Length: 410
Ligand code: HEM
Image (cartoon, rainbow, N blue to C red):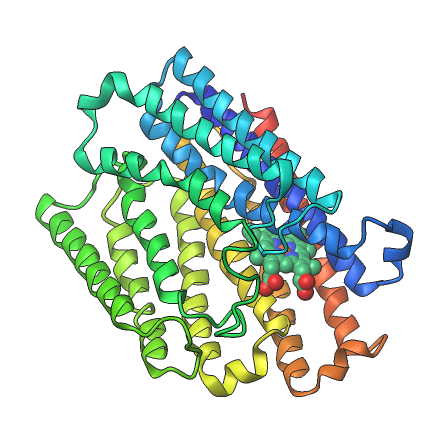
């Protein structure tokens, strides 16, 4: 990827992270002082939630991966730079328009798929623009790309249409009536999708291999064999009207823990740029915690207490603010060597995230036993919400520091 495109990508990605974090801090403040909603009306809590969730998901959690695609398929010259910037511009415009429309009250009501009205059209078009630009850039050099890259790019054509379709509230309801919500039947399948992305990541980043060819071959084979096994396991599981009481799904989720050492070995086969391993190490630490606590909290006795409490919010932040954020900083560090987050900001982020996750998990556990703790002003809930607000401010400060550095680094 050309250094200028890498710089643009960092600004878009980190800009969305900081913006979404600022909204997260606002939400945290509103949970602590609900009366503030009156002053903000009609832009109250519910209007802001999609901005926090979707800007994190489609902004911060997606754009560094879009950058990996741009780096792989775009030409590293002026034409590639123009096309890449156009793609990033369309993406951010679609996301900003989405934010304005959610604030205005247009929403499908489906979490992470709130796209409705003109924003739904705009977002699908933005995704289609990205795909067309990737194809236009890759086509003249099509013979340079291996077969898997052609298949991958062809498969991405479906994304704008699938998102358009899935955002329709008539396609399936916001809360699955069969499972009652987030302890659904697709957790193994959707996680395998992420593992497929991770398996391709070092190749898309064109990282040099550092293990002997035979060792790489063995580790790759193990990765994809275990992937095929997990995929077959997912197919064999009952889907639809199941829940966390189904033993098959408990075994399926347990099988995810084995991925952590497997992916660690796979990752170490590649030569990552000097600053990336520390962030990869953090990502693996969060992932290990996520896999173990995710499995534990899925077990019926624990899930029945934690389901729909702040424990779930803790899980989401552990996954996205801990694991995904650490991985995505590592990806940004791979694009070129000119941007490096200051050490203090890295530690501040990780500490803020750990405090936020710990407090929410603790609150969720208490709330599961006695939901009334949430309604006592000045009680345990307010104490935890105040700690989470402080942790959130620390994370916001770290992300602003990363963003400022990205704007300064030419
Ligand atoms: C400045 C740091 C952050 C703060 C203060 C913050 C705050 C919040 C708040 C207040 C909620 C709403 C919880 C509720 O309605 O009970 C929330 C939900 C959520 N946040 Fe954050 N957040 C932060 C960072 C992040 C990051 C970095 C990500 C992802 C990369 C993220 C992803 C999510 C997700 C997925 C949810 C939905 C959780 C659920 O409903 O289960 N947050 N956050």
